[in-house]
Length: 103
Image (cartoon, rainbow, N blue to C red; front, side, top):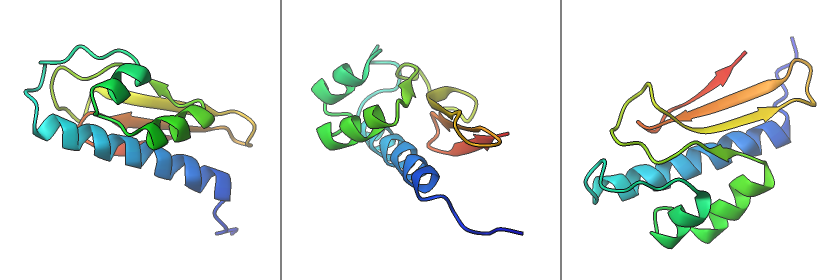
């Protein structure tokens, strides 16, 4: 069994988690549902996401699916597919701050 972690996959996972953390921190001081943010640029403009984190998730083509209107473990906020791996790697970040690796 190979237990070596692919550095790129590790970095993508960390980028997703950092973005989720920043979004959750922003949510903690703003009423849920107050914002209708639909782009990474709007996240940065509202200070929900740092420019560095925005650049980082952009470099891995992590998709922002929209600011959640409520905090839930079922609402996807971030999505990234890394197709050049066998098998492909798919991460989903949720509004409650957790991320899952989908196989």
